[in-house]
Image (cartoon, rainbow, N blue to C red):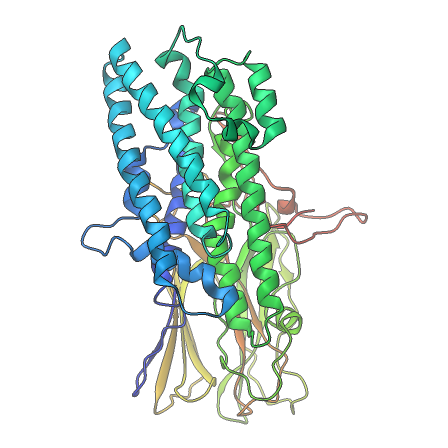
Length: 516
């Protein structure tokens, strides 16, 4: 999350206080999935609903908190206040499902501990009831408010895939001599949905309900949920782009929050397929996200086009890179403050350190600057940042970089303003036992990957700057280490070089990063 604390009369939260609960839940769910799927035992990697559900219902907290925050994120493209009726619509659905999933988990645990035919029959019947209920709920959430409800829809879709994975692994144990036809337990509208895929599943399983049938159904649902989430995310993004009063912070916040609550999750959905991934799987999220830029939120004059802001404050599609060092230059002949930045970075499993351009404002008289040594983080990584500036202006006088090894790096211009404002950039941490083991192996979920300063120079003060921070997920292994016990996924964007005929393009959203 990102906060702005001002040691004056005001206090402002840049990472919206009413979405932080959803963002935190989304980050923890993704970490839980990434961690669980690395189990080398294959079918034993099933995620307990006793682990998943408490992420959304925390003791001592209003039970609607996370779900209202999901709806708030979905409302961003519309620029409207949250309608409590829609919050209640979503919450009533998930609250009913929660009770049913808890009952199912209880029956499942009883059967697992004592696999008698009576216990098997009980968990099977509970599964069939719950499966039908979830299907109906997801169909309803796809109707009138699909963009607004997308983060909530994604969570329920994840629960459903986890449920189907359990049936794919265990249905034949629950009903070893079952001759139930598919039509006898599922209504016709279910058979009609995803018609081709589901018809093929019926054919493959000889029209009988079985583990084989649910393995096929699981593939259908993975594809359905990924396609729906990708499509509705793009619909929301397009609506934002076409809004007359859009600014960079709103647009960037929507992308970032949807990444945490939707896109990261659907990138991991294919891992539920036991035929594609029969053993544990190490997956990585190579996408890069941007916290809110340190700049004025409301521009004077004509708004700057989003495409221009994208170019000024973010990187174009690129191979995955690690930040090794960064140099921060201080202007001296105006009020001392941050003037320019240069990144020192390397590609995966590559010792060559590359230099970015020096990012600084254009069309300004070049101030005298120091020639400082770079901040070296080659053996660590920056996990959080505190930017110190003049309260009224974006004149940056000092920055604290906290690292995962506990040895912070400090930038100081030598000037301390009378009224100090601080922008904090701090991310949710992984809970104990839910750290993806094949990445950096740290409880910190994101690390700094790049810094940019906008080329815009016509700001309120000559010393003002527009500053942007990029971050990557700690599930990424910098050395492309291949495990001998589980499947290791290495995205092509983690190459250290490209063939002249190749290029990196933006990912569609569900791939967890850019594509080559």
